[in-house]
Length: 171
Image 1 (cartoon, rainbow, N blue to C red):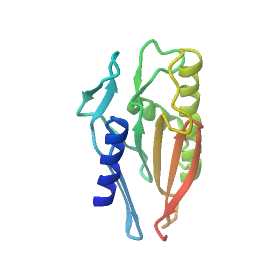
Image 2 (cartoon, rainbow, N blue to C red):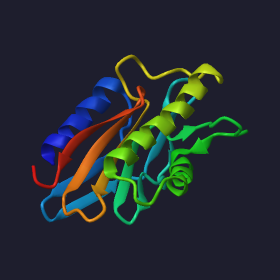
Image 3 (tube, rainbow, N blue to C red):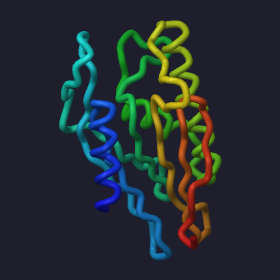
Image 4 (cartoon, rainbow, N blue to C red):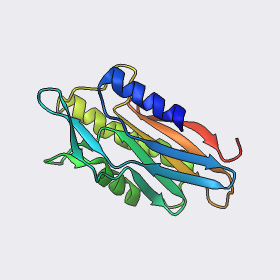
């Protein structure tokens, strides 16, 4: 934990940004997802400001799959007149997926879904894209496949809209 806090402190000092603190504990006995609730933004002058201390960054897709998020707190989907919170967009995604989805498929579908919205925002709405090689939004998708005792964790990166396996409860 001290190492993780040092990395966060160094990141803040070098970039001048606030960061999300998310923990995914993946051990043989189970998986635990946790996250802070602060949302920050840059104002028109480029200064960091606290938007809320009550943001939701941990979600349940179904009884077997959980998700944590970090990065941008809002996107504006096509046909939406205003910004929509990532939390609301995750809830919209949740009701649209098959309840029997595998962890890998859930991660891939989530990455593709949010990449489409992100792409719309930077191309059509002319938002500033994430810097080259950096994520605008990230997700950790964790849980258990149907009838399995092996938990899995995946990282979704927006951009480029993909997911990668991180670890399981046996390694």
